[in-house]
Image (tube, rainbow, N blue to C red; front, side):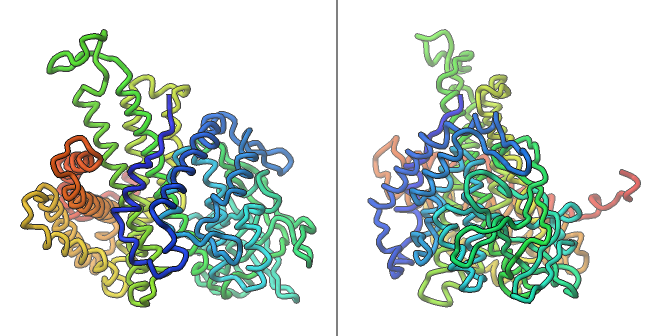
Amino acid sequence: MALFKAPLEDIKYLTNEFIDTSKLSDVPTFSDMTPDLTDAIYDEAANITANLLFPLNRTGDEQGCTLIDGAVTTPDGFKEAYKEMTSGGWGSFTCDPEFGGQGLPHYIANSVDEMVVSGNISFSIYMGLTIGAYNAIHKFGAEELKQQYLPNMVSGKWSGTMCLTEPQCGTDLGLIRSNAIPQEDGSYQITGSKIFISAGEHDLTENIIHLVLARTPGAPEGIKGISLFLVPKINLNKDGSLGSDNNVVCSGIEHKMGIKASATCAMEFENSTGYLIGDLNKGMKAMFVMMNSARIHVGIQGLALAHASYSSAVDYAKERLQGRSITGTKQPDKPADSLIVHPDIRRMLMTMKSYTEGSRALSTWLSLQLDISHHASDKHVRKEADELISLLTPVLKAFLTDIGEEVTSLGIQVYGGHGYIRENGVEQYLRDARICQLYEGANGIQALDLVGRKLPTHLGRSLRHFFHPVSNFIEKNQSNPELAPFVLPLAKSFGRLQNATLFIAQKGLSNPDEAGAASTDYLRLMGLVAMAYMWAQMAEQAHAKTGNMTETFYNNKIKTGLFFMQKVLPQTSSLLSTIMAGSTSLMALDADQF
């Protein structure tokens, strides 16, 4: 059966030892984050996830959401769990204390987020979207709107969504048709249809605050003419109390292969009152605040589901008796040996483990960079961190969700036929993980964003913020014999990434199809190098800790990292070959030849 096991030891290690939080010691709220305090937060997060959210995971998958007369009902227990989670402040870690938030670092919030998602991804979506909407309003909203809406969103009394997609446009938001007609009082009348709106309607909160992309009369064509509007489900009276219905209607919910307890809605806006967020025709700038936050969150979803699958697979492999070891019986007192003695089971478990722990390190490290970009006292340091975040956000989203799909599939394989049976719970992880590669920008779009936008920006300056630390680490440790099994593979794979970057930069200028054809392979190559960089740094720390000890946490890190370097990282060689092969064969067929 599927089980929940929070990766507490690993999360605490990454927070307390792996990342350098001293860079934020001059931020008053952050300076209070002692290991004792952060450990207590993590312990309680693991406890509430295990006892409140995880028990609702399978029942939520079985029940799904229901729509009757425009009202969506979430599965049994969700409403009570939402109230308990929000009243405990679990959804407001990074929010501004001015509006009732706790002002805590992203590296803490995202570690908690991983546990919540691994326990119940569908439930986590309701809370996560509210924070995304909060971020956009907090950064771009007028002060009056902030005071009216943010306190109740931070407290969980109200929730939030982002309404982008329409029937005729997904990624290409320039095709949006929803319109916004200006009114004399400064508001707008919003009319249009939106689809695939997560948490667009539900029974968890008394009001839902929609952030809607729409076009005003005479606006420029394409994305340059899109504006962002705050559209509440229920209008507010002058005193801030709930007033009249705002003609926001859920016309349908999708019946999905996964995340069934998350309501995915078709929304209709009919002369609904809305308020401009940010500048007119600059809606994409404000929306990207939500989208980038959501993309990091979705990357963590891939990590969380990978961990959930791995935890269950390890437990099953240790308990399930099947066959004898090919090197001789290992458990003579039993009718068969445990699955975990078999090399191919080990191959799958080690792949799952090395991917999952490497993803967690990458996520934690990048979360710290996010905090630095917001709070570092040095403006130059903030800018560099922001550019690094911009570069690696598509990598984190796409690479970690690809890993989520791969690892959850391996989890089923470890279970064998039992993994295919719904009652055992592990097939749900694969079904849930599959959406992560699609929403918040399909992974192919993330790859195009990386090679088409992020690499060329400022003549590749963002890339230097990643390449230089990796290069410096290799140079610093290349003569250390203890780290040679980590540094040499890292150096080789980093060299391949540099060659691929040069190839795309040169070929893409003359033929954009070359960059497009290489994009997915290039993103994975960068993801693997970034993960190898994490493993090499963890190995450096672990070697300093192990001494003569054997089966310790740090020894475990060294062995797992070595597997990654020897068995996983060599993918970079074939990825480079594929990239260098160019786009000719890929683009050779005419459309009517398919």
